[in-house]
Length: 186
Image (cartoon, rainbow, N blue to C red; front, side, top):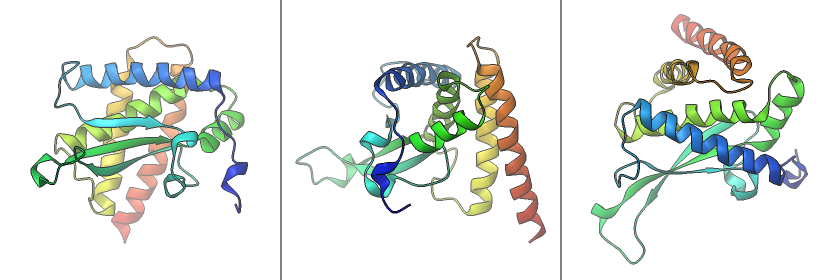
């Protein structure tokens, strides 16, 4: 793709839906990990879409990704004040293409799944349950683990269209199993 500006982007009503799904995902993940709301030591993150991504944050392929940055308060030179800041990047084009290819899926439950999944990664990184810079095999195992946790978090809630997303997500798990099997044979 020569021109990144020709990519599809979410419209304003879709962005509102995304914001609602992201808020619900945060509540679900924080409840799962027993993180009290409003606490200062929560992981620092933001959920962003194409309109808020830098050019180097836009990738072709995945529906979403987590990028880690190092932050620190303005006008501070103390290394002890640095913190990890995560961006959960939702890739409009990939998500909209997935929705067009699979009309039984709808935006809200897909975003709920994706943000729950990526936020689970963020919490696990910030609690040192997984290394952000792990080797490829460890990342694949972690990816499978996070899909399983995401499904566990979402399994018991009642959201229209979520059951279709949970069934659809089984394909993602099968792909991960195939990748893991391939690495085991190497």
